[in-house]
Image 1 (cartoon, rainbow, N blue to C red):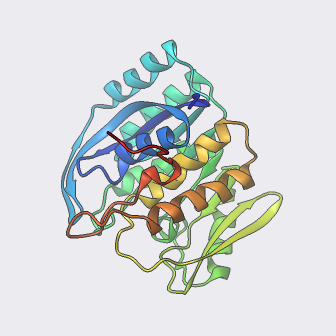
Image 2: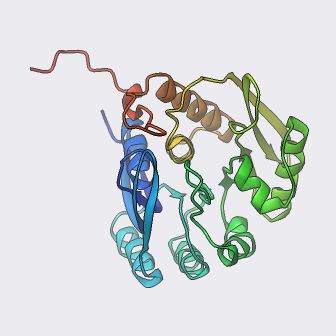
Length: 270
């Protein structure tokens, strides 16, 4: 497979391999991209939850970004876990210098098991300093509730929240509806052009660890290959759904999804 694009991933590490920078690398690679990384934190976790979070110094995060991009210019950037105001400010400064227009921000705030991964000060800084610099933000419902200070229970609530997020200066919002209690999945893409709703049948499984990281990484990979935003979101959602459907059923808690679902091995491994 020929490499189609180069993606810089700025995110935290997941020792269980299901989410975070590990899921990002697997996704970018499976979809034909070349993954580079700047690690923001190291988490000690497995499918049952997060045990601890070890932060990387903001200067070291910025140095990872700058030194990598001086050598290999990325076609797109995916941002995941940014756990403090200092980290967010450091990343924002680095992004200003590397000048990449395709940036997808997945505002990772709460782990699948419920552990909080970002403090209140960092949430404020994220809203004021970073959101306006990115091309697309991909919050789930709990993250959108934190960012907008409204409760989201219905599709109409999702639309209202998306419009509030657009007022923060981001060009596009993909609000994920997986936490809404319904038989169908409704994800909303909002921008100045209007609202697009992606509707899919919800897959009943507890193995959904890393779906948010995976979706944002899939979208930036498609975007960086030149596909339009709506198509990139549609293909990213399809990739994640197939990954959920074919999950390997690992672990005792919220298991990982199958990032290799896009790869077909035509011959038996000997």
